[in-house]
Length: 383
Ligand code: ACM
Image (cartoon, rainbow, N blue to C red; front, top):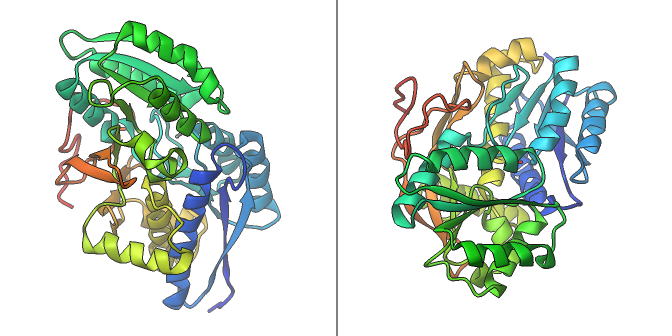
């Protein structure tokens, strides 16, 4: 039996507008690889990451994905943050019949037999957030997003979800460039002050999220009356904007650093030993971490990472992740996850105000979209 190392591709952005979250995803990936190698590798074979900087640019993702496949000869790639980058890599992995593990929350409405989706789909964060925000603050929402596919689609979904509430109204919808600064947001906050929504739904990503929350603070608005709700603002973005700026705003995610389970606390301890205290675990870090273990477990059963042999062992597989026990759905390639809602506190962490007691089945096409589905949709799950 071969003892050759197993090379895997890793595509996250070390530079550009999404490099803060990209670095954390790389660190989550490397932590899992380190754990696997420390335990003897996969079937005695060392896992070697081949990582490139994708520069927060979809065309660079596509070029490097093809390089990983054709020159570095990898069968599996872990990577992508912005949906625009996943859309760029999708045709490459389909063309060469390779596998992409995508560890990021996204807008749903996609399926590729060459992708495993380990971040939240809209029925695992948006429906819960819509219920929570409309019940606690009201149903008049103002939507602000970065100018690309995830914000357009997520805003459409949020706009439709709040319609289920009496008195709902989409009072504004604005888009800003990915490199937006505080000055770009000033006219938007003038409009927000005029329209007085009950809450603001932000689908602003990357560095410009910090500028958005700072502009909110500069506008003198009060999170107790008109908070920002987000699907992407994590501990990493809070680190960029400052704890005081983030405090009082809400995020829906399957994972927060503040989860008190032994599995999470032990994982954080191992992570700190490897990367120190400046590294910032977050929802995308956790998915990047656990998806490598899903891969390793499947490889150990398949003996190989050629897609035809490894995929049957990934689909339906389960794992004790830091967020809880998760499972890859065999039909839609998305993952059963635990919706949670957190409010940012003065320590730069999230105080969890609501959480699912069972994993919620992924429904990426939002077949079931009743507000606040904290249980399961489709098949019953007993994880
Ligand atoms: C994203 O673009 N899926 C955050």
